[in-house]
Image (tube, rainbow, N blue to C red; front, side, top):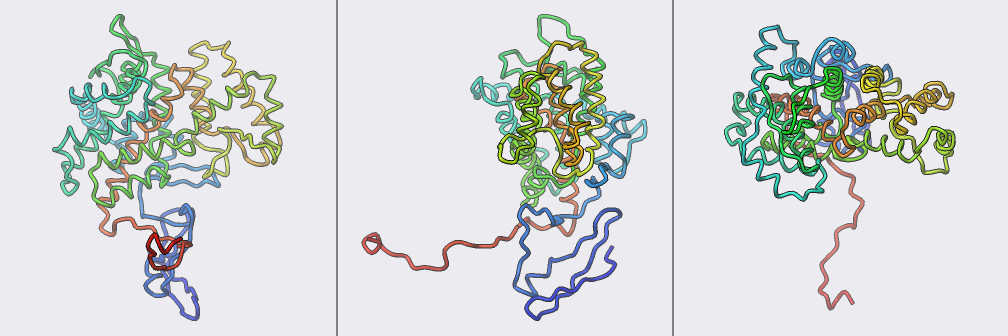
Length: 430
């Protein structure tokens, strides 16, 4: 992988650094010996120009609008596959054979129930607790219920923990939702597929039979695929950093859930929906577009553009079609929020300002609309994101654990505080 080297001159000292090339994407300069040879660190706030690891899982080309899982374009996986097939791919590196998929689906399905004492754990939360607060606590608590899969040095235990988290996350998410609305928990059913089972656990009630709408199930399955992994984003980096200390996998995933809760990360679709609520009606859209164009106005259009994708977000193109499928299936025609969203979408795709600045509707814009139409409250949006991203976190965590070059994460800093000074007693400080 090392192809050539680069020379850096620092205060008269020449430092030779190797250049490493990946299979696709930018090459990297190996600066791991820089401090030892120069006494200096690099300065890169947010690590936006720093590769923190080597990975074979996900590749993004933001300029070209490309997202690959293990080399497969996201468009092909979302169109032809299902979520559990994507889970298998991310975990094991290859798409499963029919026999492998049947076995994987079987194992996940039979791990969906959670320990019955988790029911009592939920009762400790206030009824108005945010579902993400519940998820952070419950995912971390799994390590207290499943002691037999916390030894990270044992490959079998790592596999069992991985299966358990993929299987139990929908059950915990549904329990968090049911708890927040005061309804009884619905247990999983083994004869349903992954996403249909989740929809039933969320929306069924004991008083009547629940039938899963296949259009909604397929749409949600597609949302899960699109959110399954996204390279070294904030929550994934958090999982890797926590894992580098040797923490158990449940604790690492709980750390990822906590990071995802931030409005700049997993809460973006919720923020997009709140913006639509603020606009209120289609006739007010020109006013808010004018405000968005005004550099002196603090208002920002949420759900447009992306930090990584400088072109069209490839996931958004799939979500756009999915959103319209769901709205058509549900026959929603008189929801003012969705009217605003659809009008804003059309303007954004045609307005020169949006096109010039590449402010295309992103996945958060479409997924927020779709989840609302399905009946999920905005407080559940990030929970669904966490459910989908769990497999990505686990795949990245597993890769890190098995990487012989992995060391405990230890970012450096540029210290700008007080220099050394001596302690003064209270009387001396007067």
